[in-house]
Length: 230
Image (cartoon, rainbow, N blue to C red; front, top):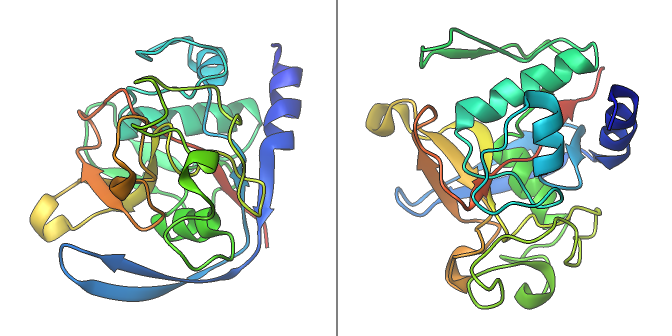
């Protein structure tokens, strides 16, 4: 793909998610809280290995395939990709950081690509539904029972009501949020469940977290979001 094709393909994949509210919960602390979600753009697919390679020149995934989701990516590598894609699109990068620093600042005024917040992620995943999943699990997700112990091409399962594919299963997805700085420091959140998870983990409400600079695994990737200019 040349740069023009990349721009066309990425723009086609960005879906406008309407504003609304979402109630989040943390099973560890038993807390619940409500978040207002503004209208934003979210990719219908997780970032593929093909797109990741065209932007970064790197192919880190364990399970190779151009249309499979990129995985084995740290949180910081995901936001570096977001910044690089923003520059390709002549947009303002959202993340400011030094190469070896854990301190990463987010520019809320930037118009570039970014990771979704976990509130945005869960709100978009549910797409107006109220249950733990937006459909029958085997129809919407690759997980331990049906994955054959590997990732699969994005978009092969049934999407949710807003046209988003693989929000559950295939790979977990990094979100932008810190988890609990008092207990876990710089740990970041990821959502959605992956190909090797039991059904009890593949839910819209499941929250996981890990280190943003060092943690990478073969069932963890990401998808891109953008704020809408007001």
